[in-house]
Length: 150
Image 1 (cartoon, rainbow, N blue to C red):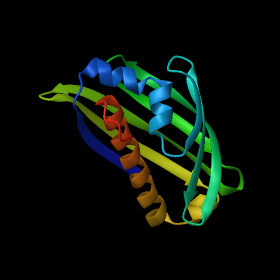
Image 2 (image 1 turned 90 degrees about the vertical axis):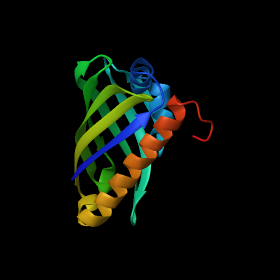
Image 3 (image 1 turned 90 degrees about the horizontal axis):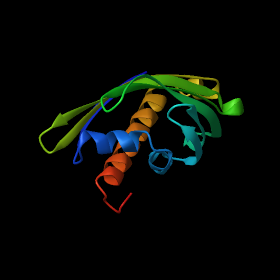
Image 4 (image 1 turned 180 degrees about the vertical axis):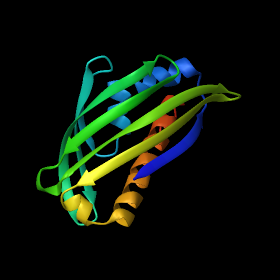
């Protein structure tokens, strides 16, 4: 499944880049994230609890950053395993561009799921993935812009 989106964040590129690489910001913004440790240089490990349709699972996974161009773009690559629920893996290209009023953040992601999750069907999984991406970027934008309703 593929996802893409664009947001204009009312902050300069360096501020947005710093938040994209900050484990505290990321942990706050990832829906269901219970734990996130690591660093951009070494990679992150995460524990995320989610319910997708009738399937509930706690996913444990790893995330690494590749093709890093500081202040401009990177590719985030991740894989999570949720026991009998299955697995999810994918990557996203994230690009930052200065624009009037702040920074344009563009992402293009591709994800794959297996196990019980794959049995739910692409419509349920696709809707869930879009909802998760929207929640993440809404929270991320609010955090970066200093809004308190994150």
